[in-house]
Amino acid sequence: MKRAAIALVCFAVVAAASGLTPSRAQAARSVVTSASGTAGAKVPVLAYYYIWFDENSWSRAKTDYPQAGRYSSDDATVMRAQVRLAKQAGIEGFLVSWKHTPTLDRRLSQLVGIAEEEHFQLGMIYQGLDFTRRPLPADTIAADLDYFATTFSSRAPFAIFAKPLVIWSGTWEFSVEDVARVTAGRRASLSILASEKSVAGYSRLSGLVDGDAYYWSSVNPSTYNGYLEKLTDLGRAVHAGGGLWIAPAASGFDARLIGGTTIVSRGNGTTLRTEIDTALASSPDALGLISWNEFSENSHIEPSVRHGYEALNVVGERLGHGAVRPGANGLGTETSSGGKRATPATASTPARSGLSGPLVLGVFVVIFGFLIVVVARRGRYSPMLRVVERNEPELVALNETALVARTRHEIVSARRESQAPRGRPGGRR
Image (cartoon, rainbow, N blue to C red; front, side, top):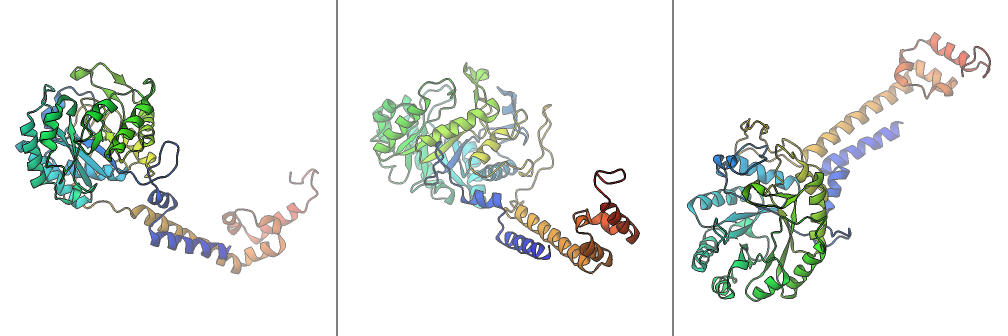
């Protein structure tokens, strides 16, 4: 027993020093795999992220609300907590929705600063359509991209790929001539992706863009015939021209409050899990999760009042990082009655170390092993236990705590009783 205890202590010390429990070590080795389960090159996991929220935004077209409270996108504490939660689930970056306005410039600047401090990655999805879903003037888009390239693109979070990533949302509404005028001369410093929905749509622009990111939030994977084939064919067409392919995976969809008619049930996480596997089977260069916080379309994976951490846990478990710890973001929770966020963490609150769990486990095992050693040593020198070890091998298996409490007379009585003939009155059965 003593040797086993010493071995256990040694194992605990090594585990604590390395900072890896078996589950953590498995997560550290994990890579995003295809639906067939075969490992391949690591695929960046990115989530579409929106910075358009004011506190009064939550009174319009919402049926669910974030557990972080009905926040403003100006709240740096919330933004930092969102980044940390995303990282905990294995999400490596946000694809942040932006166009050049004073409010969105300010919020993007804040997010870039937080992402730098948290070692988090960013891409930008440019909103090429206005509120009524009509295309913006091509000259406006060109000027906005120049501003982005000058102001933000050289910052560290935008180094996901060789050049900063820009997704042009709504390219299907623009002519080939407009797309050419915007991308010409700018692709040298930016990777500009289209947002086409089909092979035919992408082929129209394939020589003018650097790839495609399909924002398919409303697909029902259980009823759409040819779902996998559509993503695979689009990815193949993008790769044929040397482009980047960002495949979509959504948690569910319900946009009825903003004029939609399609409803895709979350299925207790089944929809998101299926869509992640299908997206990965299309050989993407990145996985685009839809979405972190699109609450009007109910595709959000951010922890919410109605759905809790369900979607984020699906992401964490599928990527090998395990379930997300509720409350790890340092924020209180929103109640169903709309209570405000409580006990906010400050913006300077350090990220929780990833070694805390393994270290606690290591310390626990060390203490447990030490107690076993102590018990083993007492057993070697205790007269009571020495009698049992020498004369009563049948009693050694009894609970040691109970043995210590017995008197010598009780042990002798137990010895006599154990020697009584089996199967007779008075014998132990």
